[in-house]
Amino acid sequence: MRGKGASGNSKCCVCDSQPADAGSLACEHGFCHDCFGRYVNGSLAELSTRLRCCVCGACSRLAVETRDETVAMSFGRDFPPRLRRPTALAVRRNTGEFVLVDRASERVLVFDANGLINTDFAYVYDTLPMTGLTVTDDDCIVVPARDRGYRCLSFYTLDGAFLRSTYVATDAVIEGVAVAPGDWLVVADSANACVHLIDDRRRFIRSASVDQQPGDSHRPCLAGVAVNSVGEIIVSDSANDCVRVLDADARWRFSVGCRGERPAQFNCPRGVAVDADDNILVADSRNNRVQELSATGKFRRYVVRYNRGDDVYMSPTDVATRSDGSVAVLMTGVRDSDVGEVRIYAPV
Image (cartoon, rainbow, N blue to C red; front, side):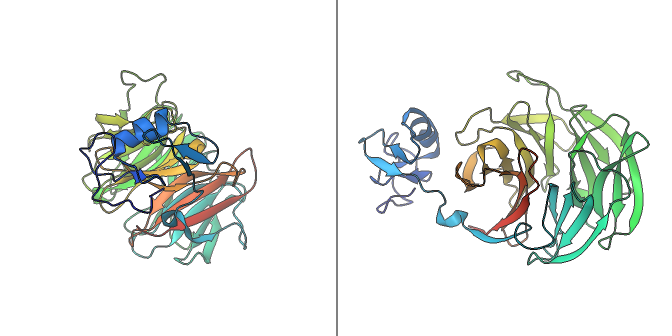
C-alpha cells in the first residue's frame, strides 16, 4: 500500500524520526515499522476493503496482493500428480528441487526446479500424522516415521532407496527436521517440548527441553524448526503463537510474537525457514500469510498475504527458501480437504 508520492527517504509522519519504510497509504502519509504497527494496524479502523489514515482521515483501499506477492510458479493442484494432504516441504539446496510428503497418498514426491515430477516412492514405515522433512547436505531425504512404537528418522536416496533409520524416542511427536552446520540434524518434538540432536554419523546425541518462558500461557508446542548459518535453532510454537530462537546448544535466547494479526504477531505458526542472510520466514497459518523477520526477530515484510475470501480450503503450513532468493510456500487443505499446492514467490 505505497502511495504514489511515497519515497523510501521520507520520514514517518507520526514520529518524524525514522524512515517511512513500512509503507504509505494512498494519502501519501508514510509510517515506520513501529508506528505502522501501533497506528495503522492498531488504532486505525481496519475495514473489509480499506484503512483509514490516523493523520488525515483519508481512506485507502486494501490490495489483495501487491506486486511482490505475485505467484511466480505453482504446482500440485491443477496437474498430476495432484497433492492431496501434503504435510511438509523441503528444497534440495544445490539444484532447487522440491521434496514433499503427502499423507493421503502415503508417498514422498520429488519435483524438479520447474515443478515437474521427477520421482515418487512409498515410505517404509507409517509416517506420523504431522511430520517434518529435510534433505541433508549429502542428498539424503529424511522423513520422520514410527517403527514398532519407536519414533525414528528414516533416510532415503533421491531415487527412493531406503538407507537406514535413527531412533529418537518412544513418545516423540516429530513436527520438524532441519539440517544444522556440520550436517547435524535438529528434530522438533511437540509432545515433549524439546529438540533432539543427531550428529553427522546419524547417531542420537541428546535432547534439550524448550522451557516455558515468563508470559507464556501454555507449555510450548513445537511445530517447525530451522537452523541458521551460525547454528542458532529457530522453532515455531503454535501453542503460544510465537517463534523462539535458541543458541547452538539449544538454550533459549529470545522469543518473538504473540497471538494477533499485527506484524510479528502470529496465529498458529507452523513451518519456519531461514534464507541466505539468516532472515527468518514463518508460515503464519491461521493468519493466512508468510512473514519475514530479521535474524534478531524484527519484522521485515510479508512474503505473501492471502485474502480471507480466497483459498478458503487452504492455508500456508510450511515454507522453504531457494538459493536464488525465491520462497516456496506449501498450501495445505483445511477441514480435512484433500487439496494442496506449492507456490513460489520471486525474490524482492
